[in-house]
Image (spheres, rainbow, N blue to C red):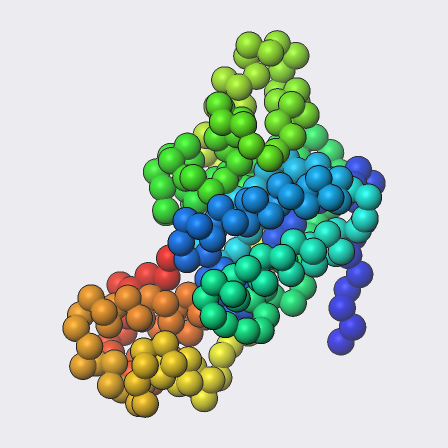
Length: 256
């Protein structure tokens, strides 16, 4: 089936998202997050796009962006290629890192623009990583409340109030509001076959038989299972291939 054409935005503004292949991690250490933010800042100057919000999660990235002098596809290819080259060199690996096609949706009006902005900043909160969005270091939220960074904050803050002294207060209150917003997300990824899943388990655990994972110490076993869930293996699949109980696997949450 041919791919559906992307919807064009009349404003040039898009909510975009890209993630690791099969949901795998693309950021492991603080240095990795910092490198991606630096990359976004560098190509902002080269491609002349406007950046309003971002949030870097361990296996995906959300961005609120206005197209610059070239199409988003080319811009994201530049960003992706730069980061992957650095990442592969750091982790001594080869090949692709990101899902082959980023997702995007047009943002046509102020109301939805602000909804997306809040949705992006609340990603770590709704994922249960932090209790307060101000505590998450890898989003643009703090750029609006004190720390200068790579975002075009003036345009965003002007949407909240003409009174400069009130803008940040209103911005903070809006971003803290509870809501049921659901914006752009990836559909549930395709099921990984047992054959591929077994290979992933062997490689990740450094064993020749998935069942040998039961011999690991509890903390080490649980850490590996959490990583397997990050890669997209289902609880039942891990149970079936390793012999670890459903209840134990369920407690080993993937840290997305």
